[in-house]
Image (cartoon, rainbow, N blue to C red; front, side, top):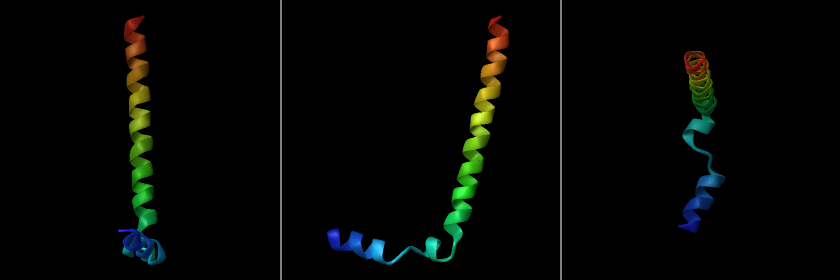
Length: 51
């Protein structure tokens, strides 16, 4: 098991080799920012309703 982990670290994955990991991370970041903005807007609307 330990040798398998060492081989993985020594040999980067296909996604890292082809640079697609950056695309995936960009998409994940955009989704998280969108969710954060959505939750913030819902919170603002709920605060206005409570008043």
